[in-house]
Image (tube, rainbow over all chains, first blue to last red; front, side):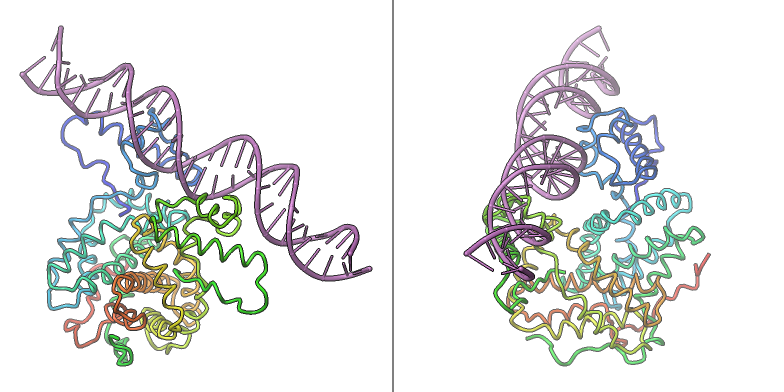
Length: 211
Length: 211
DNA sequence: CCCATAATGTTAGTGACTAACATTCTTGAT
DNA sequence: ATCAAGAATGTTAGTCACTAACATTATGGG
């Protein structure tokens, strides 16, 4: 989530649809940055892009989508699939994400930061941001299950990792000096706790195992 | 999130405000269950409760709030504060939540289940559910920081635990046979990984530490 | 150059939510 | 009981996100 590569059609002459899409995205981001997300109207974005409100919704199912849609899922999923299946699902997910984000090309960082920054500073987008992880979550769950995890565990692991990732991205957006990769690493370290720091071991709760 | 004790004013005669509130909640839940959340209109809830749409918004800032508002934060926070400060923040949060939910009284379970079930089966509520953890998240962050965690780590730990908790609640709502406490335990076990299952130790990423 | 179809526009409407102001209850002090 | 202050509710009018149905214009391949 939070990432869309506007320029991944570096092929031939951009078709009309592609040009309109690019104009919508650029207009939207600019307006969001200048006057805030909540204060920007879909109609205004459309007008700035030289198009009708109706057309906006032909490109995005919702206002938030202009900010939050992204195409990075396959990379995440592949990286998770590469983790050793001996690991518990949660750790496979954590380390897969670690690996995938380590590989994000430097040139993509500015636009990612732009988007994340808007999302981070807009309270009304908090929910939308997490909702937008929905697809990614499904993809991660599928991969974990394919590698032997239970549905139950896969869902929980996916939700938790994504939450940590998003929180890490938010932190990164606020820290101009931080690099993307290292920020993600630091975030995932918080949930991938080194054994040395875990003296008591997990509280495996003998008490209330399955009613 | 996802919990509101309608009946915690077992004191004297309920005031008018309390009666209206109770009617709104009951009408809302019933309609959501019978015809679905998206298919239920605020106007309809209000009408069923014998009140105006405007009045609904005097009690709830948004439609979702009827489902998602809750008063359990203080218990969570206290339980987290009780965890040993030697533990990393993430594990303190996990085990605090474990402890707090273990203590949820049996009689509260049916209404919690009712709410969670509606939230779980309504895709358009996914985002709202997580957004509604916002306050809880702030509270957890504050407690973790008070106990010595960095802001950065506290935010990430809080986000991840809450995600796991919500995912666990969703799983519980779907499994009629499961008890609340044991469901939460199982969910948290997924992220509080036993050492025995973590042969390699955390991937502490020598590579890209701080740019 | 022409036509199938993609891209866009128009109109009309629903539903969540807000603002401003008017009205009707409650309640506590007298 | 009474009466005023304040709480609870109603009314009206409006904004904004989003959808549906149908009409129009632009584009590109034959």
